[in-house]
Image (cartoon, rainbow, N blue to C red):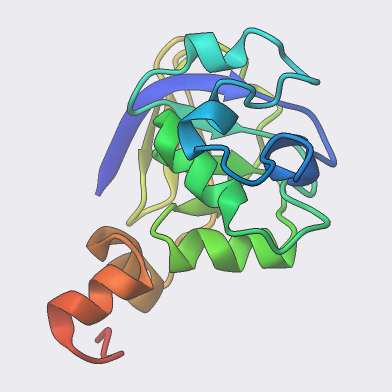
Length: 166
């Protein structure tokens, strides 16, 4: 599975509270309304630039602090198809996989907002078409890749009826 899109880069230690806290989602607020405020504290124009198929890029410990599934749902609703970061908060990473959003670890230093990226989930190869460079990200294990390809654990269960991912 290969994904291609424009990069939107954030820094290190980005907490899920910045994108999906109750501050941005009081009772009755829709996911779409939260998307309109996506990372507004870090990049006020980000929500206006994101297009379906784009790639979120970050530094160390993306998604730290919270266990909110909303953090992943908001990213998917905004149009992101993959998150590439140097490292992830454990709960965010697990929620991403469970909801079918690939999260790959790799060196993001050479990537800038606006770069045209292509990521091969099967091999972990990250091609920056803007700069003519390639890097290597982690490879998702085959069972995890299958869950992601199926759209997450719930969609996998609907499709296969069990947890078999072999």
